[in-house]
Image (cartoon, protein in one colour):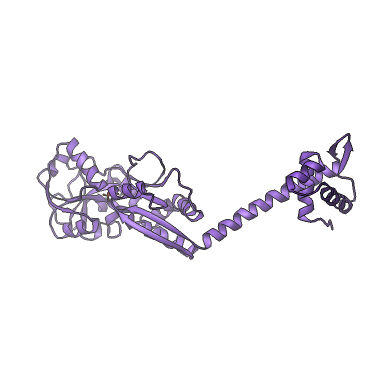
Length: 326
Ligand code: PGA
């Protein structure tokens, strides 16, 4: 059994790197005799000379070279071990602050469940808000990660797309347009419409599509929440355009139908973003990778309709989702 201390190996490695006891001593804040004693003891333990001295310079012997290679592998392994331990400690406790766009609240909590089970010591703060408020939170550096659904104006962000977020026309089941195929977008003109509040990304997207096609809906109500809009649709107050995620748990078997209107769905994505200059904590970084790796398989498993909703025509994959059978 080879008896050497970690300290001796460090002294040896520095001596080999510098080819000098004196310089190794300087680097390690030791005296030169201490360094040479340590190397002598190590030589004794190995049982072969580690250096040969030619002039003032030290050269490694074959055994010395082998030991140096071994030392490098040992130190590298220890470094990786230290990093892994720091990560484990970091993941044992910590905080994660996330701000998510309103539509993502239908999906992100489902992802957070297994993450919290895996790392039970992590405290999570989840703020659900609209596009404009998220931008303000970014400007004030309030959160670790942001889940947004349009690439923001802010340039200094690291942004990764991770899932589709299509916007569809949602109507009550008994609406006269339910069941019609490929409805021209102009037919929405004059429809009673429920609109999200100013500052909403959904509203911006809808408004610009309607402007482009000169569609003039009658905005009957403005509501600041997707849930409130769903209730208003169910109550017969009008139709609206919402992310398909908002009705994914009820699907179209509940009170809603998705109208098959030209130029819909409006294709959007969710992105996870962080401020470019921000040093992400181990927790935030782990969640970011988790989100990128797990969200798609989970979406397919938990919410298989997402795939349907992103098909060019919803009807192609699931007529039930587009037309009302009742
Ligand atoms: P909003 O955004 O809440 O600002 O409308 C929702 C979305 O874009 O998914």
